[in-house]
Length: 327
Image (cartoon, rainbow, N blue to C red):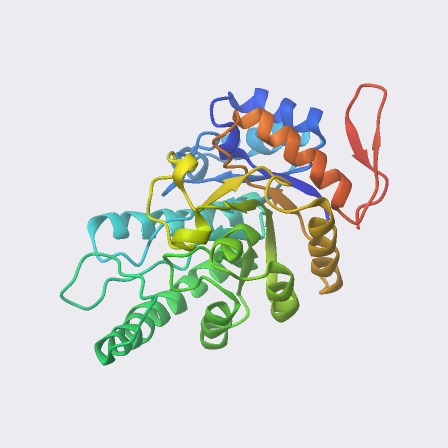
């Protein structure tokens, strides 16, 4: 279980400075944003698709630091029935193609969320279908939009050389928990699995440890990301909170650095259970704690990750961390 980083966190750093920082912190793998919701700060999607020399240079620059690419990320809403949705779908296909050309076997993305019906253009995440029309909406979203779209996406990914599509369990998407992931997987096949991001289950009221046991070998990628439920606010207003993330002092929950929402003991159990389920892939930090600067948040999160992952680390004379054994 190698340590990794969603490099968008250090988007303000030039590419090679970001790589050197990762090496110094003991990060071993990179999850690179390719576009859509990501600004793709460290990767030129079109340029790399067009040039074998640029692809070779990218890989050599990464490998020269002892790093590797664990996944490409093209998270967005490709099911949105607008020009924006078409653009996102195009980035998804390009990301599949680039992953194949780079030899990257895993692509991280979202399932997407359609509109409420064929005449609507606004994505609509149904969370409380108490009236019959909402059941009709869910049926349309899954059967008329999501399943056909994902059947095509799986074919494109396979033809590109991608082996795993890791769908993140983010709210506001059709796939947002194990039940919905398995619903899609049962329809389109085992090319799709979950990018298990515990933070989202926390704010939706779930338990990532129980989710990991349910998912088993459908865990294709893991994000190390924490949430703190804010006492005194959640108790009054509950977990449904539409205030912007920047209003962290008034929200009922917040994304926080690893260990700032749940204890070290919790993370030890979570990572151990994930490994018990057969997962041996990377554990990738995604840090969105707005109460500290990004690099500080990454450093503090890495301290927790090194303490809680079920493997050993050693510190070299140069101050770099390396693994005693990659398990």
